[in-house]
Image (cartoon, rainbow, N blue to C red):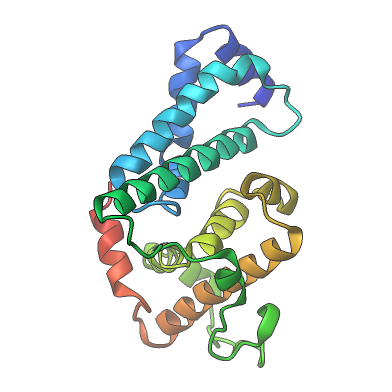
Length: 223
């Protein structure tokens, strides 16, 4: 659907249009919200609050950015707010003495992978897979599960950037605006995330195993 058409229908109170965008974006919003919290209740609340904000704010949507970018931006704000609230409640419950489990952006951006240098540079280029038909591998459902599991295991800041850039197809500028990060951080986080996914694919292509099998088990149990 073109943004103009769906926006006009939403402004007119078209319930069918709202059901359509919920069906299209609901699961994608939940996936992004999971990079802020593992709590299913928090994730569900973030998505619900996002849709409420869409309903309340659709008349003020000016179309300067794509509708999906606006919706993802709302989700990030809601998920971030609820994750902070969740952490504060945990602090109170444990007497205010709890270490934050959230990794910092700097840690996500500067962690060093085996075989990689600083600032996302390869010490040595990745070894070619030597496949006769690489396309057949990437079209398989098994490979998609490997990629999904690898993305699910990424540090949270890397996962958000990879989801927005590579899964949702947003531009670097849109991603920076939504996540409120600099272009430099966005590029480093994206490269780090892609490198981890590449490493998982390396393992799968070479020996048919997942790098993080626990991620696959968790994803299968997640609706």
